[in-house]
Length: 472
Ligand code: NSS
Image 1 (cartoon, rainbow, N blue to C red):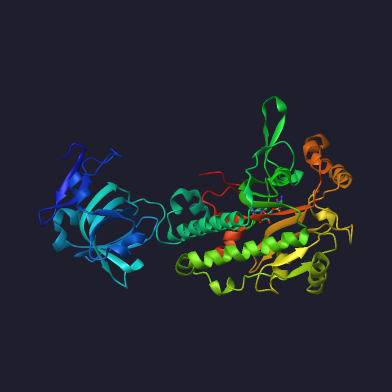
Image 2 (cartoon, helix red, strand yellow):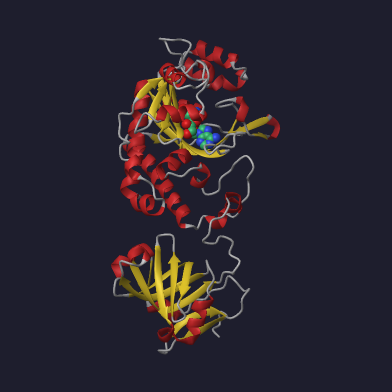
């Protein structure tokens, strides 16, 4: 036994081939030995192509295995990819063979082997096992098996479900979308200004607020939006954005609603409603292009996304007015009346006519938030837009030109019954050098769900928060 409490196992050819814990239940402990560690270079699975013919060590988790009784196939994943490691009973000797056969799903291990290119192998490469170090054994009752599970069960085990290849692919697409957003804005001179999460003023509407006590100052709300704060920042920096978690106590249990979701919110001085839509369409075209370029394998091979549905997503996007949308919907049998907000089914119907996202513009005042600018051509409506994604994914962006007239904004705040004193600072922006400005909010999870072709947005965030779930 080594001083660290592990057993080194020597293979048939007289070298260390396996290091296994002497006593289960003493984890975590350090299992490495200088001999095994110095034997080969440790590499990521995604880098195996550069090591064909060499002996390397891969560290990861056992995703799957099978054995013919004479040859064992381990499928190992490390987050960057998967590789098949193959060991034959004759070559590895009895001790290591016993370990290979006894490995449970999700055991963590370091496996050393020579790299072979093999088109038939998952990932295109194979390791011929010469050594293995069992770092953390798993147990036969690993809850996520390779069969179908109900969604409640999966959500209850989200901390483990995240390891599934499909979930890993979605998280990678999400990361690419996030990076694409930041690159797009950075390249165009936007400045990232982080806005508070504990706020004193209602940002969107009173109906969906999470409240918390705030010392002697009464109630604070979790931010529904960073927009109001970034209207102030836009007067300092011109073009800004915030990108972070936002919170809505939505009672809706739909595939499009979370209580905590991430929103990108650009805010632009000297930009009207049309300019706002131009930025939105070029941003969305850019994001989709980046996902197609850099996540194609995840989208096509793992998520089985029909990417031909994403390829037409290039600007310009069609624009229809709210009035036209209502006429279209009524002609198709919808019961919508002028003045109502569009429901999910209405949005799907409108989107069906187009191969790329569609803007619906200038909604009635009563259907939208208090800060939107009155439409000079039809004061019953406001200068705003929703961007509706194709294939039933619904609204991914809500945007508007902001009311920049002090008196009109004040009367909207009063009409909505909002506490005037909380908006003193916001009204100040209209007293001290008011300026035309616009912005929008893009829901990250809805965008990722659409790009990935995932039905419910809860799969697009690592630990979703919904009406009836706060665990894990
Ligand atoms: O309510 S929004 O339409 N608009 C705003 O919050 C503005 N303050 C944004 C701005 O102009 N700066 O929300 C924007 C987007 C919406 O289109 C959805 O894509 C997403 O945020 N959204 C949600 N995603 C997931 N779950 C929920 N509950 C949710 N609500 C909005």
